[in-house]
Amino acid sequence: MLRYDEMSLVTFTPSFCQTKFIKGCEYLVSYARIDMSYIKRNEAIWNFATTLFTIVFLSAFFIIFNRDTENGVVKPIKKVV
Image 1 (spheres, rainbow, N blue to C red):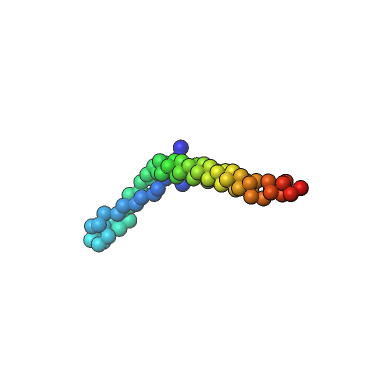
Image 2 (image 1 turned 60 degrees about the vertical axis):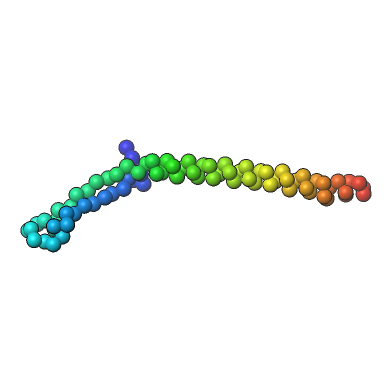
């Protein structure tokens, strides 16, 4: 069973029915639901990859900033004290 977001509703009306030459033909509409779950799955994978990239990126900059702060601020203060 697919969720509503994973389905796409497609309708089709024949072009000769839109001209209304045939009586009652203007009400002829075909409906189909198409499985779009692979798009949602790919979107979820990309969102997960983006989150992992953000975590790695922020962690790396935190380590670099922490090291620079230690060398530039904390060590000189410790030498003075």
